[in-house]
Amino acid sequence: MISSDRMAAVDENAAALGVPQKQLMESSGNAVARVVRNLVSPGATVAIVAGRGNNGGDAFVAARFLDEFDVTVHLLGREESISTDIARENWDALKEAEYDTREVRDSTALDLGTPDLIVDGMLGTGVTGELREPEKTAAEAINASGATVVSVDVPTGMDADTGSSAGIAVGADHVVTCHDMKPGLENLPNVTVADIGIPAAAELFVGPGDLRTLTRKSESHKGDHGRVLIVGGGPYTGAPALSGQAALRAGADLVRVACPKSVAREIQGYSENLILRPFDGDRLEPSHVESLLDLATGHDTVVFGPGLGSADETLDAVEEFVKAFDGTAVVDADALQVVPTIETEATLICTPHQGELKKMGGETDTDWHSRKELVEDFAKSLGHTLLVKGAYDVISDGETTRVNRTGNPGMTVGGTGDVLAGATGALAATQEPTHAAAIAAYATGRAGDLVVEQRGYGMMATDLLSTLPVALWGERRE
Image (cartoon, rainbow, N blue to C red; front, side, top):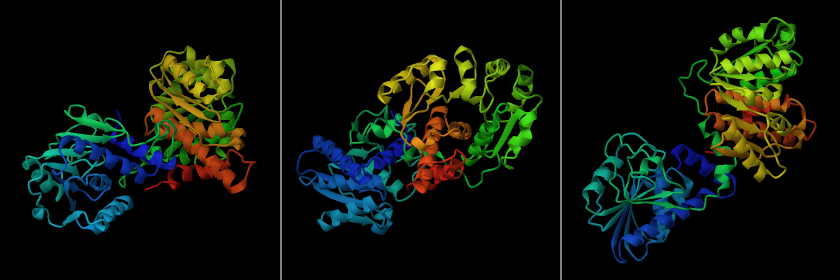
């Protein structure tokens, strides 16, 4: 089962793996044609009603596999309005081969005749809401035709995620949906799930398609994209500063750093963009927990651990905080070791490297396939999301597991984990935990790759701060 948004991400990830959308469209159209051939005999009349996007492109391809039928292809709109290159290429192929292609420039001029079967290729899974013209009139004509109707991916007008429709929708007798079942199709009687050649790696490996969820509305206000609290510092000052700056670079609107008063000025000196909330003393202690819990209520996520150290009283404070906290927290560094013994209502994203994972009671392996299974099992037993760092990062909540392959050996330098923790905190303010961890790992690794591409090895963790926004937003593939 896959949602429409996730399907779009998987399509894009497949393209990044070297399986282009044009190839997938060819497979989709062939799958539709196979269903048509099973429903009507050679010589039957088939009307294909196609939209101007890739759903229409699938239908154009289908026409080329139906030469034993009397096929007409009705394009809803002018051919110059076809919105994607691959759909246009397949329309042009039909014209060059002298198929019966017709532009429907006025919805009232749509004449389907009396076909035995109609292929509905108007709108796909990414379109919701009430149908507009010319699709509305076309849907009415299809429903009134009495012909057998085959819809491509989803009946036009139906929400693929919910099965509902805001107005009229095509009443399909059969649906050919690609790659996996969509939630809204479950109650329809005849649904064929077509394997169109998307590799399993497009779902497993984090890729550019996963960044599709990083959208911003034009009417956004301060705070809409996350308020993050970093709790860190004491023995170390650079770690919380790196995490705080990374959270800002990953899109958070507001970042505060709660740290011991003794190091607050030093941490502030790293960046004027950080807001400091000092507490008394040289390190975190249980006496600070109550005020930190109050402070945390004004934030979407808390990043707990960078630079805190492992003093007994500090770990006692971490334990008290996590036990009492019921929000979303990223737990990193020395704070990780207390997680397995704690019962909490908090949503935790734990970001250990493999040595820290062992200290938590987990197991690891040099083979990433085996490590993936071990991390998934341990995440399930913990009841929290894990982002286990390595040459291949493994992200799992025990149910959903992803693997990230970005990054390079230059990122063994100290501080890159603090950048990752801050980025994860920012993204967890707007994304589901496992997805936040996955795209944080992808973007931080890609940021490191960009640094090496530009300068070679010898990077510093601070180098990632300038390339992190590029990795998140600068590589979007439309």
